[in-house]
Length: 236
Figure: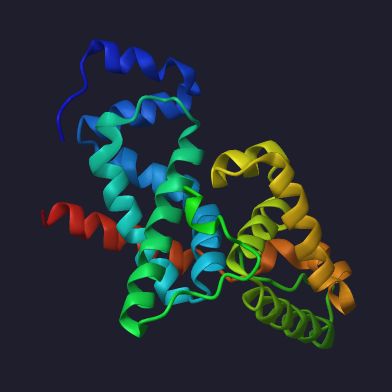
């Protein structure tokens, strides 16, 4: 990866000090810094990929490929957007590219009902762990509700899924969501409202309560993604 010149580095001043430091270290070839970057953003980016592709294994693969592209492109990152937003767009681009390839293989387009601008969008989950004071039957009930909600979310058009995950699960603001997805704030509001409407029957209350536990993403999954990306980088 080519080292950025002085003006390139000064352009990173728009980033937080922590993000700018990580970018400089990664551009210099510091894999430990890139591991820190991945672990910092892994959970949210996995959620985004999972919400888009509706498959855990595909989401992991897409996230790995997006990280590799990020590592190679950080030298050209100018800090015009937040690092998290830039990474989200890379992940989304990779997910949509995979969807298009799959559509071509099947000789049909993905069914993206009511989301005519989904492909114009440029864009992690702790497991539910029962607390000590939660009875086993309550924990089992929560797991069943989570599984049901995930199935209902998977049935939503991709544009509504991604907005719902970012707003209700990641608790991002409307402005942050719009920046990540490259869509107007008004579209974020309308899609979030529609998604909640579609999930509302018997699920809205549980969605708010169980949101952070959707699409389980535990430490082993995080470690697996990081190890795979680092192995591929060291092998190049």
